[in-house]
Amino acid sequence: MVLGPGKSSYDGSMHTDEPWNDLQQAQQYGERLLRDAAVELRESEPEDFAAMARWWNDPAWAVLQQRIIKPRPETGLMDMFAQWSRNEPNSGDAGFSIFERGTGSFIGHITLHGGQLPHRAAELAVMIGPDFVGQGFGTRATKLMSAYGFRELGLHRISLCVAAFNQRAIKAYENSGYIQEGRQREVYFHDGAFHDQVLLSLLSGEYFAQQG
Image (cartoon, rainbow, N blue to C red; front, side, top):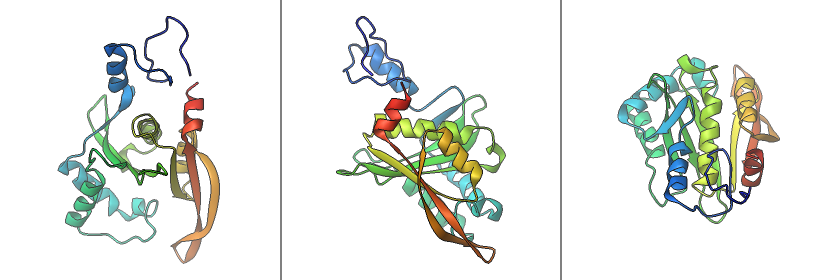
């Protein structure tokens, strides 16, 4: 979207292909990049990883995100989460903790992985704590992380996979602008039966068109 004459104020919800004209535009972009009215994405700390390890090892929630329910030692899981969240400057990967702005509560974690040149195609994964599911936080975090991927990392495509029986997650991703582009048959095996997996994605052009 190209701003008309005299409209130099930066609106974080809109995209412009023009360079910034002043310091205020740059700072407004930075202020809105990793937060909305309800949630904020921040750097991850060891205490976040400890909570994530408990969620990961809970079979009632593991069945929604893992192909095999197999609890693991907390130390190894915390090392894995730390690897996801290193946020090295020259990497196309990013991982942030999700906090509720009103209370400061840690509510989850979200990552982008694999967004290197030349393809600039990353995979998204999000984990929301059991006490915070069903409150719209996952949708908000997904929208923020997608915006970060397209607006700051320069990604062209973000995709994700989810078990077909996890309709709540599929609805949340679709509410975040993602489009179902395929279905992989009988990928998951739980409770003696095979289950399908749904592939969703969002392209940069689609994202910016959605912003108006």
